[in-house]
Length: 386
Ligand SMILES: [Zn+2]
Ligand SMILES: [Zn+2]
Image 1 (cartoon, rainbow, N blue to C red):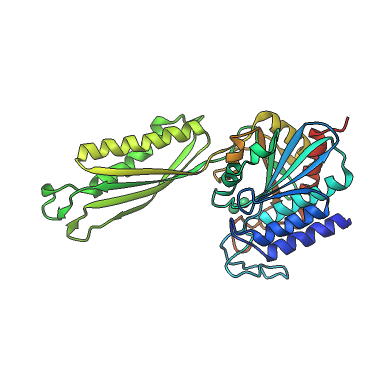
Image 2 (cartoon, rainbow, N blue to C red):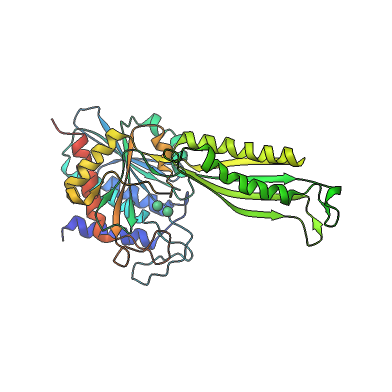
């Protein structure tokens, strides 16, 4: 085992023991900053609160590349029982961001040691990914104004895929996530005399059914796959009282910004139409948390080429179907060209095969060096020394 491999495993276990929630990654960002400084990398802190950026320049070229890792943990109680399990009750690295941070730190070490590139590398350590707030905070703090980054790449582990295999595609790789809330304001009344008032349950039930016509009638069945799920329906009624209000909440996913805009408008159109026909009022709000993760073709071709060099031709799927999970890297993707790749954490039933966000999940140490090599190769591929 090479000494860098031993080091990255030790870093990963340290980070796993000290998980921190989004925007609270104080010890984590201190640890990263200390390591980057040890490697001789310039560190810029407090970009997006606990976020930080390491800058490594080599040669005279003005070409640049951004590599992004996420740092935050989840409010999940760890049920693993190994020596490096979480030391914080109710908090664990259940999404492998300890591994992502470590792979990027390992690459920073290798690139700072060998300096086999010509240009500028930005190591971007992002806080608060899980709740869709960290990427936006870094952008608002001038990530792309303070640093001229030509293209940005991110990597996430994926349980259920053989360890060290790569998965991506040159378009929408993950869904957007938005939530909506509809409040129907009626008059209600005695259950025996519905004609004396207006009933929010009957109109609410019609809205629930009509919302399903958006995916089947308003969006292309081929180009605009989407999910609209009503997840809550509550009222202030009781057995013999027709309520005066009903609240409907739900969640929607889709794969393009155009489909997202259509869904937001279509839900309101359905709600407005049903409410007018029933003679009731409504309030409507729509909240987007994640945009869809959309890769640019040129950067995806680069990532696929590098992944094939690392993992072997047959172990890279560069045309994978999209996933309905979400990522806030999507907000960075709206700013500059980008690619998001997934790296297999291990097949189900094998090491690394436990699903993300589960209390028995653990990032697979066997893929740490795969990630280090991928990042290092990507930099030397894009910032070739001439
Ligand atoms: Zn997660
Ligand atoms: Zn994650």
